[in-house]
Image (cartoon, rainbow, N blue to C red; front, side):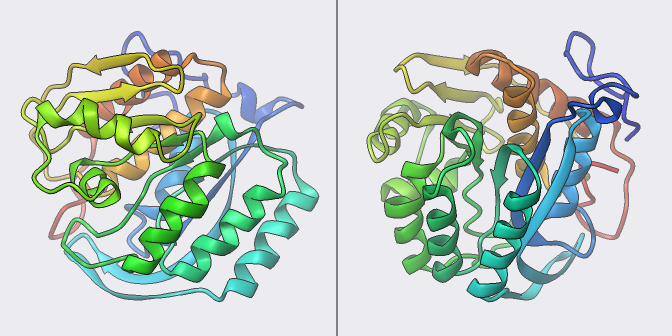
Length: 281
């Protein structure tokens, strides 16, 4: 997708804007590496670039995957992640952080420790709780999920689960549209000050739901885009959300803009590969 490809009505940054200005915001993605560039840090960096922000990355895991699914992976060492995060934070003023696949309980704890040392406003930290791949491969152990709930959620300002992730984080099975508001409240109660966005790709229609830290609720109507280029949709949404927050949008506006941007990306994606191609090409 070209950098200036944006849905009508959205406030995307034009080419030659922030990324070429002296005060360009720098945003960090902490996520896994997808060699097919459909998800993880590669996808996040594309989103940042499309919004005129400068992206840097700290890789949490190396995966073996393509458009046909995930074949395996290994998390990086806790020590390597710590060195990477400290190196970047020492050099660059980070305006925001997007968190994706973490891969191990040790990595969750290391990242929570880093965030606990401060430096980035909590309201500009977005967690996409990647627990399983779309093909069903487990990407974080139960111990890791527990540490994510207990140690990481209190350090972030936003969490963007899909239906399955909302169920796993709240311990509730069979999440339906009717249960979404109450389960979002249950998740928000685990970390006061947390904004919860339920991404509704598994709902019909695919509406998203926002519970703000102030207790306001919003439904965002969606429409199904018929395409095979859906790999990395969750990564793209959470990264776009971070971009909109860094660029100054209010919570509900940021969610609306991110949803519109991803919908446009789905509509214009070029098919790649033999399976589910990337939403961002």
